Image (cartoon, rainbow, N blue to C red; front, side):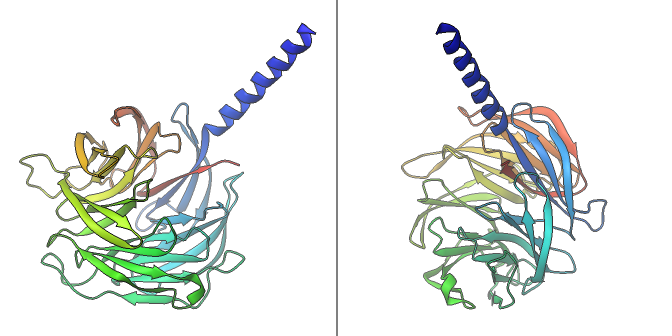
Length: 373
């Protein structure tokens, strides 16, 4: 009897060890700029969550997929073509093998789509058209392809820094009822009511249609806190992080904090922003001449931010970054230096430590970790 128990215990240990090992590896999808340059589209690597190593798996050839979104069930990827094509493409994704298969594409509704999101039920895709100053709602068919009845909403206005709208990002609220856009050209965060059943007019102005940031702020990217109560925006022109209370499509300001060192006079060019999965830390990057990742602690009751440190991103033009699902790693894109830089993340302090690991890839622009089925 003891021998049987030992054998069963050993088998159980092997099984749990295998499961643990399996969950430490992820697909890493990388968006790039293809023209001019050597990149060809979206690249799929395997990321080892124990070592930080990356191994090439496959690619999908597509023009300048600088940003893409994945459905909640991980079956489909929707990508912008930011270059001359100005379109949105649908691709089937095999979350076991990492293979991407092109399905179809539709016009983005306006010029220069630079950001894309998909609602939690996979019914609609939303694109931020930077060049055209608009937000586009594209319906998704049952087979994952994009429908033809597109809604394109042109923004209006200007700011002291820009003479026309430049919509830089679009995200969906946690309850899937609202869509929010960051308009760099008008210094506004616009709020839309989202109703998928109202196709083809799925978006309409919310009761609070927008909030206005400081003149010349230039809001770029947005992110929600995991508790769904706070929204944060990183600004490109004045390089600040703006914090808001959020409730049912309504925003009220909390604070704004600078990402720049004291005495710094050059352009910061705020870029990307993310909150750790535990909600304790916020990370926001600058590019251009500074190239840093600012690290803030978050007051869990008020949403207020306190600067902890600034970590050099070690790459040029740190356009985006991503935290892996385990929370142990942060990867930053060096768009101008043609590399992805790996940092080990301390989950207790929030600080980042360079590992010396890099992936050489031409003009990387976006990263997304996906569990391997």
